Length: 192
Image (cartoon, rainbow, N blue to C red; front, side, top):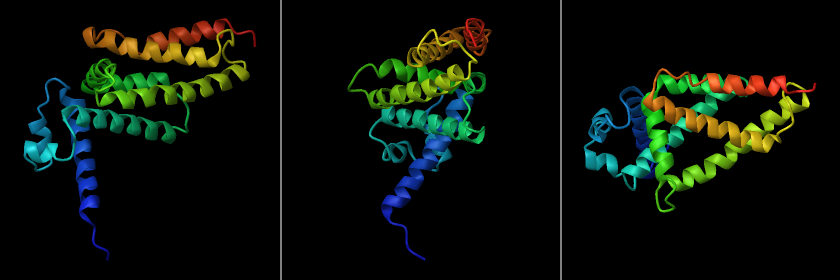
């Protein structure tokens, strides 16, 4: 059996840390969670934890990347179909990750922030994937094509981000309803 080198061990530990942080932030919230708690769950000291990341913000960015990857895998498991309602319901089950997302998205406006690259890469990919889904729905006559798929994708992503921000201050808001309402408007406007 081949021995694993320090790099592979380091990557495995980093993955363990990200899984623990994802779990803890989802359950306890972004602001309420101490990095010491994440370190303890991984049998590390705080300096030991931070050895695996460039900074706290770098670690938090990697947590968001892990969250996005988990969501992508879920979507594949659902047959690759886009389900805005399910995505938003996942958010209501993990409010700490919604809070982390909103906070890091705001901070990512600074090009020197570690999350800047993540969000700069994330949005074009999301627009492309969502645009493709919408194009198929338009071609099938399921929704109106009065707004080009690429522009509609931008609107839906803005809706998702905005409703998450509102939900953080008012948990009575149903995050899935705005998507349902918008899609109903598009269906009513379709000619097919």
